[in-house]
Length: 321
Image 1 (tube, rainbow, N blue to C red):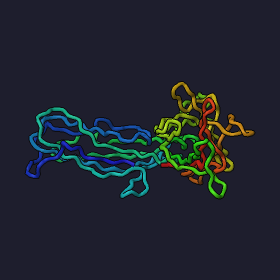
Image 2: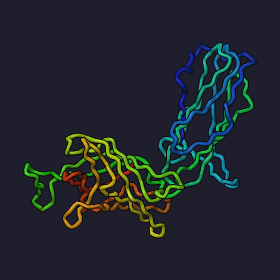
Image 3: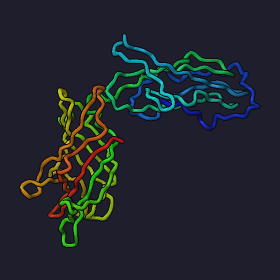
Image 4: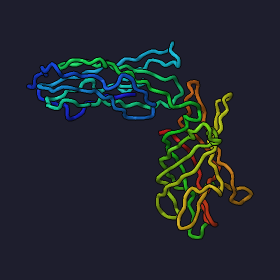
């Protein structure tokens, strides 16, 4: 989506009259731009030349441009209004530029692009500039192409997620506390997690591994929130549209270091901590959108361990933010 916002310093009083200097001209600084749909705020520069003895009013109009017959093809970007679905939204279409003796100046509309997390076509929107109080230059249109940043289902996994996890509680003797139904007593937590994919097409890990990072994971051994970095193993079956994102539990991959101890994810095999995976499942719908939740077997226990010290976690889940 995109939003155009007025710059604060362009405000003027109602009494100010329009510029009459014939040398003043206004146009876009460029006529084409290409942006990724995950770039966020983008500036749309407008160049003003000539002195101004009064105010200038700049107005832009936006409309989608269809390029279905072009190679490579693209589709017309759709406007979103009041939170409705679409590719862009416009909140302010006008800038009022005050009187000034500066002979050359660049002012910016702002464009905010919102990543839709869907594999779809590139889109294009055309801005048309009009002006009161100055002459309009030749560069009176600006075409902005919004490139889809998701190439595969694998790329859709990237982004911000909320991880739910429960820490098993112990008594003073180090024995797990148990509920009457035989389940362990736990304390529930959440952590903001950023998932990143391997962008390099030449990397052997692209399409196989997803990197994870959280700045605040509750860690009982330190009694504080600590940063953790780890990886997930990724797989996807196009035929069934089912995928897996599995905790990569191996003693060779450090998730946290403190005072010389290297902590890693581990699982239990044959009553011993060992390397393995905690399997998470996701699905993909008919629009190629990844499910908003990645669920893990609630009976699987994930340990963070080092040198005989370990803490078990259960009730794991990832939820798209």
